[in-house]
Length: 250
Image (cartoon, rainbow, N blue to C red; front, side):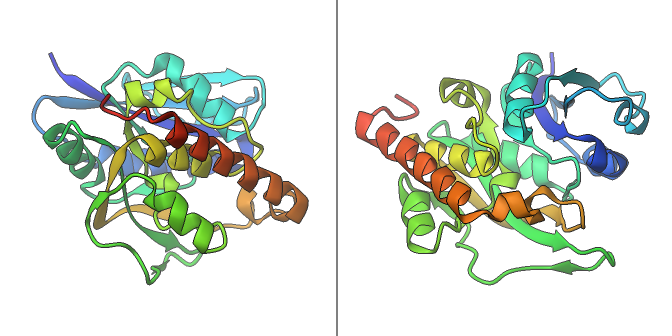
């Protein structure tokens, strides 16, 4: 019987048009022998605008629900996460070739590694890509180091949460994504790093689309009062988890 990695995608109607490209990048992934993927697409709301962009593929599950933001949508998608590991793929992004195989190789090789992240390239509107200096070296991400770096660098994480692949049981133990209007994925990353070692892959794992409708570019996301509150609660959660001294594997 095949083992399964579940790819979770939260989507709202304006980003639905990018789903075929996300699916194409997923379909192109070559998995290790004995593995398969299951794509769970959860709409943040209920509309008639998302389903037409989804393929007729038995490996794809589509669900809808009350709007609550991407963190709520992803957490609701966990009801259908019937695999060993959970991989994030935002609706407007694309997996790089080999990304899933690299994630699985790390998690299967070392039970002490709870999650993986990888290098990211921005995918610009003209189809070109752009990288960033300062990525860490390939290898383990020790507990607490993401929080330390994030705090010291103006709340900018040293690795990208949109590339996350995580053990399903660890994700569930932390309650999924934070109940925040934004930065819910960064909050989860900080929490994971508080209780578990991770791994950074220096090979490109994701093409992160930049476009005019991007939620992170809208004024509410940049409001300084809300941003300060988001950062405060994300940091407090990570420090509280670290103080509990519970680690994965326990």
